[in-house]
Structure formats: structure tokens, C-alpha cells
Amino acid sequence: MVKAAGIGIGIGATGTVTATALATPAGAAGAPVAHPGLLHTRADLDRMAAKVKAGARPYAAGFAKLTANRHAQSGWQPNPQAVVYRGSGTPENYRILYNDIHAAYQNALRYHVSGDQAHADTAVAILNAWSGKLTRLEGSADRFLAAGLYGYQFANAAELVREHGDFDLGRAQELMRSVFHPLSDDFLTRHNGAVVTNYWPNWDLTAIACVLATGIFCDERAVVERAVEYFKHGDGMGSVKHAIPVVHEDGLGEWVEAGRDQGHALLGVGLMGTVCEMAWNQGIDLYGYDDSRFLKGAQYVAKWSLGGDVPYTANTRRKGAIGGWSGSETASGVAGVDPSMTRPIWAMIANHYTKRRGLPASYLTQAAAKAAPEGGGGDYGPNSGGFDQLGFGTLAFTRDKATDPAAPAPAPVPSSESTAAGSGTRPQAGTTSSASPSPASGRDLAATGSQEVIGWAAAAGVTAVASGVLLLRRRDRGRREAG
Image 1 (cartoon, one colour):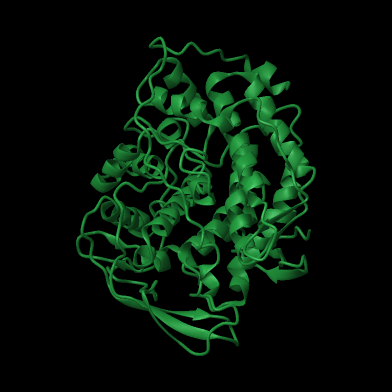
Image 2 (cartoon, one colour; image 1 turned 180 degrees about the vertical axis):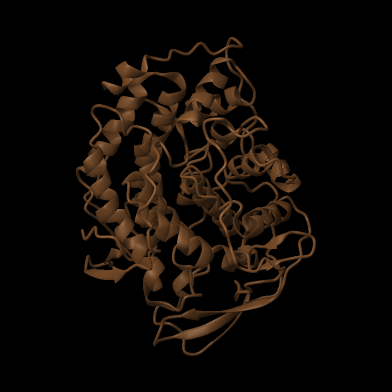
């Protein structure tokens, strides 16, 4: 693994390694990285524990949702694999990986809320087992999705136990650097040999999330800045002005993937929110970047997913392989929606804008209320779509309407870019196609993985908490750190 600033490693389906130059901003290795500092800070974890101990709503219902999940049990046994495959034409086993990662995350989160050491020990055992065995990710183009999704999730689970005496932090960091991050960084650079608009926003966003999480978890500030720079100015469809190419007069930001389908639009919003939250916890305000462009896009998707009418601008995007098959696809209107479809994404985004920032966001608020209490992996069906977000936002992100004293708001990021409505228009997803000769596989390069029927389920109602008050033990922090 080449670790010098400005260099990334790309691993293809066959394991071939190639070097990639990164466009890392000058002076990127400046400020130190804060820990814990991915999706949850120390203030966040302490807030969850105190609120649940007091039986406060809706935290108690969110915690009951967590404890009811089979992945959150201290008896979970990991099943690490040396090679993980995702994609058609391969002996797929990636479900083992995402189930184990979610078990690690849920046990780690449950430990921080309850103080029960058994859950911390279980999370550590899962993560150590995988860092000691996993050597590479392979498969079709879907291997990039695996790297991005499970990379950012592994880092988040590991961040929650990085101080545990038995956790092999160095080995976990090496796993991020040598297995997950190289594929994600390479995708942002080369897009699997496809034209840059071939892949929908969520492909870029999984990669951005992984690169950002790697930089934070591994104390690599230059890698953090690489992800931030791509979010703002990247050529692919996942950078913010390409994912949200048009801001309409009513203040809604058109989400590019709304012309494709609802499930992938929800995925994209959840991933962009994840990127913004992790950056925020490092003092970088991507939530507010470009006049809070993400707020406008999230509001658009929330309104549309709730069954509301939204404006749409017809757009055409190019797709295909560089130097090979190519074509175009045009979207003329938003796809149909199922108002019962949900993902555990809304609490995090709604609480940032309405509670941290005190901004109006009625559609986000409605979507969050409808999805509450949010669950996590295992609560939204058995297939991969139900594991794309770590979830439990009702527990983790509900907050009072004030900035946490321990987590001051980052200073706004100066920007010289125009924020005019309609700026940065980008070719979009489509419903009608025109093309030169078909690809050999007979499929769009960006369609890999889309054949799977994803199991979304509406969030369950509030779970009763026995005896009215949860009596939880919190062990002395010094004893916890001793392992």
C-alpha cells in the first residue's frame, strides 16, 4: 500500500494493482483528526446514553428498536472470508460481510448506550476477525459498491471501539487502506473505464463515503480533503452540483436520480447525508455548502417520496465505455413513488437542518416522523438494500434545538461558485434510450446490481419499553478503556 499523500491504489476484479494520482488540495494535511469523529462524536454518545437512561422520548423507542434487532445481540458469531465477491458471474458471498459489519456496529452502539461490556467485546471480536482474514474484494462492477458501502460502515463500527483494549486498531486501519479505500479511490478517478456520466450518483457517493471514512479513521487528513474536494467539484454524478443539477424557484433542488427510481434516489440522499455528517464532525460544513444545496435536494426527495408533486427538468446523460459502446438516456419526468417505501435516512438530515441550524425543512420533518423510530440493518428486509445505511437515526441523531456545546458549528466554507438557480446543470437519469451498438453483456454498465429485488419495509411503530424506565448500567470509563 502506497501511503504517501497524493497516491491511491486501485485493485481490479482480478486483483491487479495500479497507481492513481489524486488531486489533493495543497496543505491538506493541516488540522488534526477528531475521535470519535465519524457518524458519532463523544457528545452524541453521551447524549444517547443519558436520554435513554432517563426514558426520554423518542430515544427510548429508538433504543428499543436497536435492542430488538438480531444483529445487536452479544452472542453474534462472525464468519470472516478471505475474499468477498459481489456481482453477477461470481460466487457471491458479500451478504456475510454486511451482516457481520452491521452486527459489529449495532453491538458497539448498544454498548455506548447501555454500558454493557459484552456488546463491546462482541463488536471487537467481529472486527478483529475480519481484519485478520479479508484480503480483497472481487466481482463485477459491483465490487466498487461493496468497497464503498462496507468500507464506510466498517470504519464507523471500528471507530466506536477504537479505545477498547483488545481491538487491533492498526490492523483495522490497514484493512481500510489496502482493501476498501483503493477501490473507492480508483472509482472516483477512473469510473471503471466508463464515461463519467455512466454511473448514477449513488456509485460516486459510496466511494466518497469510503474515502472520507478512511481518512478520518486512519488519521489521514489529506484523504479527508480528497473526499471533500470531490464532493464539491468532482466530475462524476455524485458531486453535489451534479447530483442536484437544478435549484427551482420554489427552493427545491432537483435530485438527478428521481428520473430513475425511488429506491436509488433514497439511497443517494442517505449517502450524501452520511458524507455531510462525517465531515461535520471534523469541522467541515458540507451540509451548508453552496447555499445549503443538499438541504434543497433532500427536501425535494422527501416531498416526492411522500407523494407530493415536484418540478422536473428533462435531461440527457451519456453512458457507456470509453473507446467502446456508448449511448445516451433521457429522463422527461420523475419516476413513480410508493409512499410506504423508506430507508433510515431522515432523522440525521432533518435534525441537522432543523435542530442544529434552526432552518425550516417541513418535508424532511414529515419524512422523519413517518419513518420513526428508525431501525437499521435487518429491519428493512434481508437483501443488500436494507443494509446500505447503518440507521438508528431516531436514537442517534435526535437532538434539542440548539448546537451541542461540545460540538460547535463549523465555520461556513467560503465559496466563489455561483449559487444561482439552475447552476451546474448536468445530464440526468433516463427512461428512453438511444445508442450505438449494444454492449457485449447486453446491459448498461451502471445497471449492475439493479436486478436484485430490494426489501424495504416501513419502520415499525413505537416499541414499548418494559417497566416504563430503563435502568442501565454505565461502567467507569477507565475500566472500559482498560478493555
